[in-house]
Length: 500
Ligand code: NAD
Image (cartoon, rainbow, N blue to C red; front, side, top):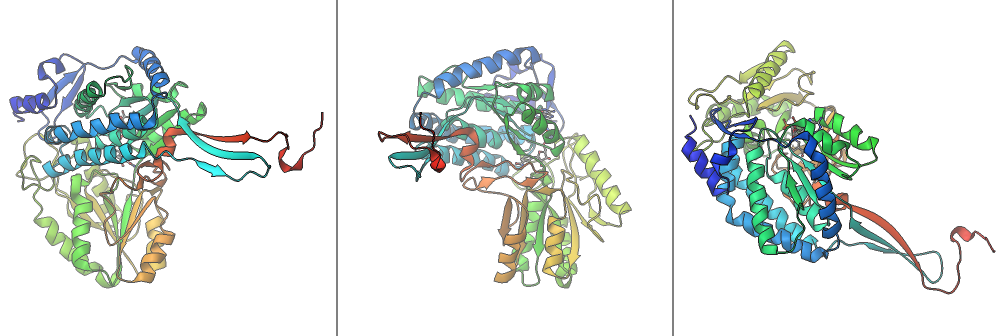
């Protein structure tokens, strides 16, 4: 079992007192062994009005603070995250079951986005636009928008908040965070870290960043409120199908980051040593629980058999087990439900003609956790089960003859998050980049493990939202077109005459 005193130590290092994290209604289990590590008080749904009102008040003050000064708060947040990297990384491992280096990597991603957003706070650039009227100038300017709700999934319990919050804060918005009910402790830890940054900053308004603890009903309250102009929601397509229309109904803005079903095409010219390493990391890293995890391998017929053989060999030696051990590469699934869904998908794949390698419950792993051997499934075609996202380490393998066929398979699923090709043929690589229908398309690297500098997100059932780098910040601001007349006459556009 999880040593509860060790868990308490990790919580204390994150500024959380284990003794105060009990007596509530939300049980928090460690996926490492299923042990209950806290029982948190939930935010009553009736309190959401007050939470939103506080956020509105905070916004009214925060939007008047200059953007570079807002960036200073995010810079301090980055400093506090650097100081807390080990502690928060350990809590990610305890609460989400990530291996140590992935827990730390997630915190590093938070630090990176804080650095990015700090620079961005001096670069919220608008445009000047040529006016057709003499003595006039046109500009496009960007303005704070209002409270931004951030609804997050269990699998990136802290990084997704930071992608959103760091940008929203420099853009002048207040933030209300509704973390996954499966990973609320990491959210409370981030709130403590944020408080330390606030204390050093000095004069930020109260309620600038609030965390609410609970389930979908709290997310629904944020989604329904016209006082929350931006709802950034990360999670399943099932959730996005509810949240998207709800926000649209009141003409709010949603940033949806939903499920993926990511593919790699391996062409005959591919460097197979590199491809094998990229496949294994992207298919089994985070136990296949990344939105960008590799789920479909589309291999040219001439190399398919050889590739499957090399992969099954690599899979056989994968260390599955306690994520706290330095040697482990595959930790647990989040819970028993996830393992049951994986088993059901493997059964369905068999019924649809698949040949399954691996996929059994893992031995030599702590009792009480949902540990599985990652699976490779050779499929005769892209059947129904392959077209769905199963959030577990299942890699479906299919063959192809022509690149057209491979790209049609790659694009032939409802999701559109991440894609890649391994090839040494420049024509193939460029052709693939033009024709992949995903938000992310890579050459000679896997589909997962994005850097924060690019805009992150995908098309179709992935929801269309963009977060993190590039100009994703524009999603957190309101755009205005300004026309200024510095002449002494009043010409109308399009030559319209209206003399009074
Ligand atoms: P989930 O959809 O079960 O829950 C995500 C969040 O949505 C939770 O906070 C949950 O409480 C909330 N929620 C659920 N129903 C809601 C509703 N009706 N209204 C408002 N909020 C609601 O997802 P999960 O199991 O935590 O995460 C796994 C999923 O997230 C996978 O599908 C994965 O691909 C996806 N994901 C996508 C990205 C991305 O950037 N595209 C990133 C991480 C995870």
